[in-house]
Length: 327
Ligand code: BMA
Image (cartoon, rainbow, N blue to C red; front, side, top):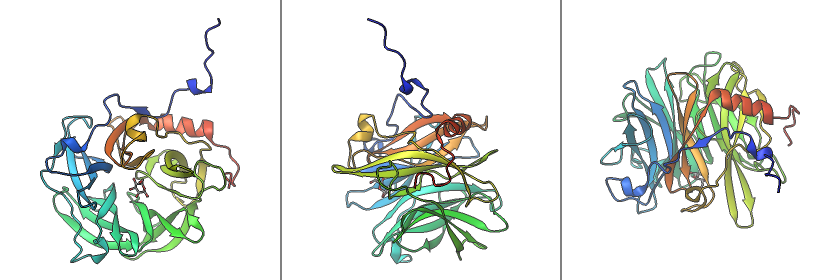
């Protein structure tokens, strides 16, 4: 019999799973928890990778906890207690916990900006905090009221104003928006930048930013999730889009197919089945190698590697240039 011919699936995948996945699990935690997932990520000045993880405790509410590692892969040093807890006395909108942090280093402020979800009675909203060291935080409270989430700050001002990508729920659907601010507190000039597709698409009806946008020569590279509703639940997969560097509301390219989805057991089984959900990445000193950290099935943290070059090449090969983007 002739050997099987390589099919279209033989092309190299743009993201490679780390063989030792998952890299953070609840068994590793220094205090009792239910699950650890959806972690923001940053490469610190001392070379450590810091993951700010969403940790769900055994009341069902989430807080954030930092884990540090010299190589970003193993030997994690986990804070012995929660790093950032909800503070519903000062911030009533955090009454049901805080979730899904996205971290951006902002050179102008010499601080990290952490955009996270605060779970209020009115639903999820976007909150912001600044920190230099992930030990003390300046909290800004809610900057986008419910229902809104999946937010990250761009690392520099665009046309003199700060820019935030986020995902409000509106009667028009769950699309990605950009908003601008002079001071990180007052936000306006809201605009849709990427719409969920419709019908049978993998990213129909609900999309949202994953990790913070990556600045490349060709534009802001954004990894986003698409949520496919099926008869047996939702499937969270990852897609790619590119936006103009000085006009981040302008989408230059959008992939047609998803580039990464739940396949391994730790992604398919867990508290929420069939979820891959990155909230952070680090870029190595070569300016190209990416470590993407993602929540797997709302139960653990996993790692996939890639490169800016590979993602841009994948996007070129998988985007159709129609401006309707299949809507
Ligand atoms: C989204 C967010 C994520 C979660 C995902 C799958 O809406 O709440 O925190 O990982 O659902 O449950």
